[in-house]
Length: 67
Image (cartoon, rainbow, N blue to C red):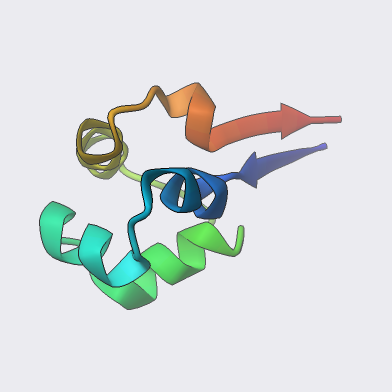
């Protein structure tokens, strides 16, 4: 089972780069890249909230669970 991160798809749909998102939410590009590639072991709710606010989406739009 795995948590999949679909941040790259959402960014593409919004026409936003990782650099732009980084600047708007105050998270380093390196940390967003780790999240985007699915290598992150955790995410703070405050970070998830900031990403969702900026991308106008729900957490379920970014994260999914696959068995």
